[in-house]
Image (tube, rainbow, N blue to C red; front, side):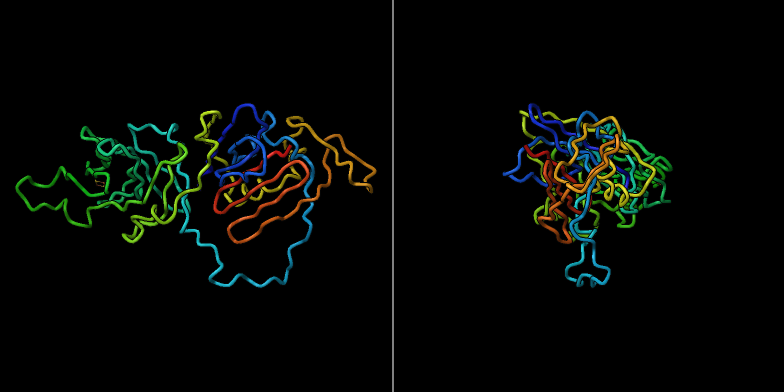
Length: 307
Ligand code: FES
């Protein structure tokens, strides 16, 4: 999955870091920041999360695998494609998510963003390399087939005008994914089967009230990273690296409650006690002295500074 960097900075509040995450707990105070990338941890984004992390318990090696009914279904999730402000509505945009090549484009006839398979049903040319035609349809760059917002082929330039309506053949359609714009982000659901067409009525993407709060401000950004998605998530839930990887960028707060400690290095790496408050296949909620973080599968992470 292409890394997606989102950054939200509410006013007049202390920041907390997150990717795309569920709303913060009402008992916690702080400001919102969406940061799936380490490199967004500037200007205090990860402030006070700079102590080294010590899990209260090591994972048990003999732990049995989760029963089938508890296994996480990666295909029953909404995935962020991009902040819509980063997308040119006059052109298609390609991306790979979960190994799926998808293309997002703006259907001006409906006033909605669409997400399709990034493969033309004719000769599999990437539709992301196509264009929006004069009628607002997605046009393949190879032979010019045109598709409407539902993925139906509307025009095959090479088909004789008085011949059979070959463009109406089901094989001429593009697979379309459920999609929605929420929190100024285009989301899509990675199933194209008809039974998932109305999935939005059953399940929505995670919502972040802070982003839509007019008293807050939000900054979005995107950046590609040359490592895997799971490495990024592991990094986000690992505060031990912060004083070293982000040395000098963030203040450090030595843990004075570590009585056995006789040495502090200049970076300020330290021990902290992390409380695992909730843990399930859906995610992990942790807190420690100065902060809390909520990691939700598949790609949501929120860190919150506690007063
Ligand atoms: S491959 Fe798309 S029109 Fe031919």
